Image 1 (cartoon, each protein chain N blue to C red):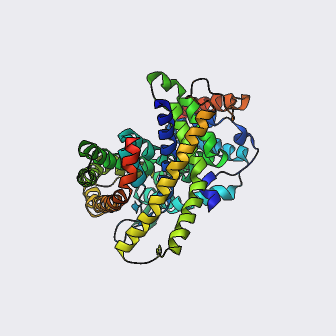
Image 2: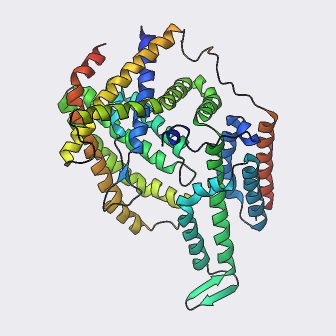
Image 3: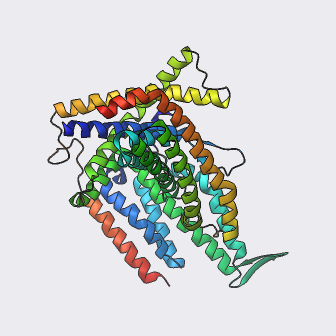
Length: 265
Length: 191
């Protein structure tokens, strides 16, 4: 429970996908969302699927993890597959059972749409499976840093996000402590009427807000004592390095887009 | 001195965003409403940030909370449609509420503000669901698009009552919370 709250779905590993720069992975996921919609025939879908599966293989994440992640939407995929299978009335008639007709185009459409859906979800979950949230935060900060020129508080937003991530476990512990302390004073969190429940929630939230605010003050003092003065000229503990594999990934992505564009009908 | 205040503000926004994220995890469905509409109290930390540090701070809490939720929990469709909808709803709720509070600066102003926020959120979310969010969901889930009749029915029987209930629950809790924290909030505002 605690672990899943902090690192989310991250699966530790040393594969080439794990070691890639979060920036290249973020760029890939962003453009992949558009690229999947380029595929529209057998050849282009075959290449799209092959690309997605080679990414899974490269990440060395056991297939069982990916399948587990897909479980919640499995029924949705099955439903849309069946819908396209049965509702498309184009092409050769393949099978008929009473009023149920399966046409050639229906089979194609059903498979295509399911593959597109799967590719999209697998690639986005692959990012969270191979990259920790803090790496993603660093990556986003670096990618969006050109926007600083337009006075967008990118550094500040990234800083607040990493503080937030860092304090999720701490504040969870604190919540637990306050709940126990209030239970000892007679507050009942698990039962009671609507009014009592709201009172219980408030008795939890007030100390939580005030304690966390004190923590924020201490943190701000500690940061200034160490000379923090905004993002300008700040050095970093976690450095991002753009490696050959990252350039290769982007080149492959561009190639994929070009090939799909040529092959699509 | 201003610099210290800014850092303190940022740290508090960070902390309260984590609380918002934790509250978002403690969500629950309502009986008789569609199961994908989950109630949570994560608007409370955002609202507190908005009245103490100004509306932009509240928007920041909403944004960070949803980005964290997407990074940690992911999204069923791969694209954060649900998180974006939650962000828009939260902003629509806290902006009118904090505006009225800052204008009057009293508990009464806050109450009116929260009620106005609930109304604005409910109306705008119904419209946005009809034109943007529901079509986006069906598009990314590759489900057949809802007919305008179906969409209207889902909004009237699901989304509209959901936002009314969510807004009123947050309103009630926040008013009680504000009454308890009033001395502290005024001390912080004076500092």
